[in-house]
Image (cartoon, rainbow, N blue to C red):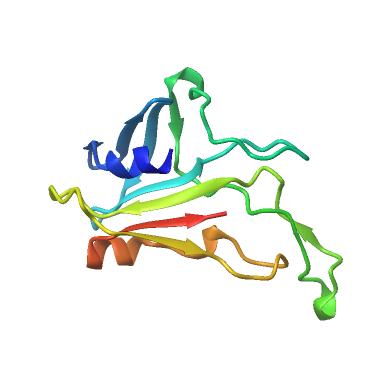
Length: 146
């Protein structure tokens, strides 16, 4: 799915939003003031407990999906008092991408940077890295992953 989104990232944009048509339906994002197209919380696989994830292939309900908010971070322990692992954060439903694409300027060969967060399964998420500045200044597509 990622390759489909990257190929069509700026298929249609307006002053208030950016839409991409995928085989699953329309993905509705945001066009920021600097022209960067932002799609947050885009599912890339299904989440089923104790079963290997499968690539996302479900049509969007109603023919479209809004991509305006970050998806859940993955469930992680840690962050408690004195580093104790007594606080559980996140969700098992966390297979999301955040995509920041440069303003449409006819460049269909923009480089793609993928940010994989660290944190040793105790902290961190793809939501921690905002790729807006890289997309605007350097014309690259930035993808963060949970």
